[in-house]
Length: 287
Image (cartoon, rainbow, N blue to C red; front, top):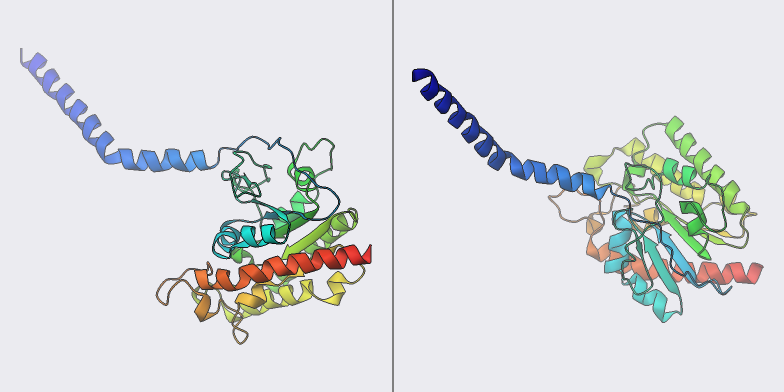
């Protein structure tokens, strides 16, 4: 009898432990499940991308900072006013937005970063090595359906730890340039990486980030490559004395956050649109 009672008590304790543990751990389980779901790949976009030779079909590959620039800088509406179709592609799990700003519920499956898509400099260099296929069967081939292709690495790429890392970045950008040269019927816009919050970098790293931005827009990089243009996002956001995110463009005085604030996007969004339009006009004139 005692054994049965002890067994019942033990079983009850185990059940209570499981129930209580489940209640306590459920929020953690939900976060883990949610995290894995963010890496689910959307299907490839198989809809129409209409390019008529006017170079008014633009796609912008970006992550979070680019999303804020588009929404807070009124970028899509401004492109529409100029007669452009503006598409943008964020993380793979959010995928491709059409010119109306509507999610296509599909993506170009940018490779890397556990399914999110790697738009760091090394990731862009890898993306540009993908073979071009017709019909498209990989991310680079899908991007080439658009006549104007803008790409951006986000602010972590301004933490350039050494001269060796700086030189590696330059080598990757040169590799990308070689590929862009193979597609003279496309216009490419490189957007320099945004600067970091001062508490996320140091003077040497910030100076090297400035060197990369200056080099990309220099004659050394651009001369002889008429279909390549560089929008210096870094310079527009950075304090010219320290090369970090300008105080007026930080989210708040107390928050260590390298995302530019709404003011930055409101100011720079129209400049980005104008730069792309002027680049296209320059490209057309040179053809």
